[in-house]
Image (cartoon, rainbow over all chains, first blue to last red; front, side):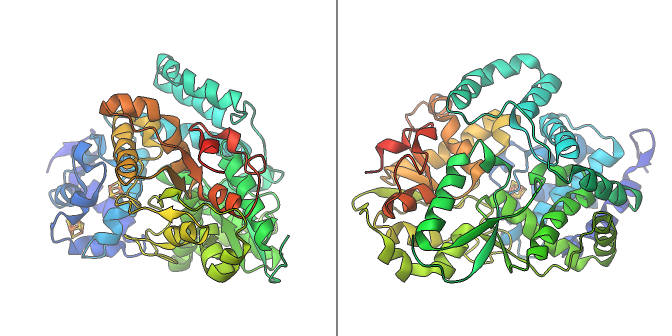
Length: 191
Length: 292
Ligand code: SF4
Ligand code: SF4
């Protein structure tokens, strides 16, 4: 058995993952994959993925899920559900992609291309604090994490939006933010 | 203002509609007013979490949606209506997950109870396009058109999350409701083969090269179809299609600039709303030049 990440074995990681997949509506159908490749052929970003959706199922069966998590694949999923509606075995692929994102997060496995993860993390910290999104703050946080010079490329866009009055520089809280934070805490405790 | 059919809807604008896509919000409310649909904004709604929250923590993401749905339940109105396809699919998905997972439902109940809310899952999640096409329907819409848009060729862009994955009110692969609505408003829907193909959304920020490739294909397909403009039904799609046309043109080595409008701006104009009321000046793609 291969040892990965210094602690979790490939088989165990796969097992943990499949247990979580079983909680997704229709998740158990992942076992029915016939490797037809319809998902990969339907995927708009599949051409850029190290592992296409079909290959991810093959990787799961071979217990090399760690390689999938460090690859660029899961965060290239744009959540378009094309694979999900076309899979002849009825596998909810998009939701499985989400589960892979969460597995990486839970196991602390850093993907080779981190930006999707960085953006989601920055976004969520804003929601936790305000209950609403805040565009400008999000961009600040994101580019601070991923390279402040990249932000220069966005300057033209930001200026245009600002002139149009479409960029909110502030952040606004919902009235029930305390209540929402309590709800979040309950979900965390009862995991 | 037209007479109401007596039905009131809970309106969930979503974060984008408060600023970035405020023209979508304004045109949705304007169209509703013209057609006698009563939209009552959900009191103290929160962000749906978009595709981000659920990618990190599903349980907390579901409580975000559950809070909105529980607040909607409290109003007694049967539908929660949103104009953003992202919010639409997130709310619908939370409902589905909570329904099939008793432990999740129990935890959600306890979480909501800390702020005096309860969730039974009896509110229907609807897209404003669905309400217009199915509740208001063809006859009333055609009858309300006062500004003819004849001769205007429109590429109806559905994006991915209006029909997928649940296909509640339109086909998952080859939807037609937006084509219908464009036709009812007097304009001409063109045959747009990529109408439900993904725009990449957030990838424009996180993976710009991939994002530009996807958007490039869409813009080119609309232009090849002979469209004068594209109409969208999702805040994220809209920003993605309108914001980077110059960069995308450079990326493709071909001019793919084309005006992008919210579908409610097109319909709103046909119903007699002014450019100002529809906030056409907010457009980054000269949308105002397309409409009479
Ligand atoms: S479409 Fe479904 S059955 Fe075919 S390879 Fe993909 S997951 Fe497997
Ligand atoms: S949902 Fe994700 S994996 Fe599936 S086709 Fe769309 S981008 Fe590809």
